[in-house]
Length: 97
Image 1 (cartoon, rainbow, N blue to C red):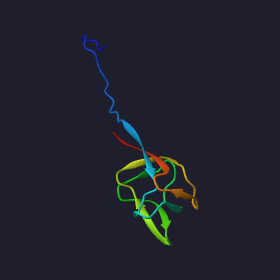
Image 2 (image 1 turned 60 degrees about the vertical axis):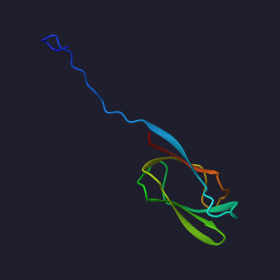
Image 3 (image 1 turned 180 degrees about the vertical axis):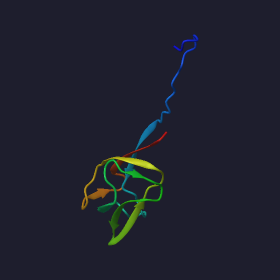
């Protein structure tokens, strides 16, 4: 309380984050599995929309997977060289809610 009887209130800017799953994409109707070739991010990295998250291989073709939005990588749930089913969770990220 200030000396004149008024109160000082300190406001903090807060952000709310939502966790999302990043999954092995299905690049075409025939694709059932793919290989995670390379991670281009690490846990704790801040990523911008359009940044390359990883590279996957299907049918001897390597495809770069981009971030669809700004995010923070919380965990990497797959290792380079893993063969994964389409839809398998390969990473967890936080995004602004």
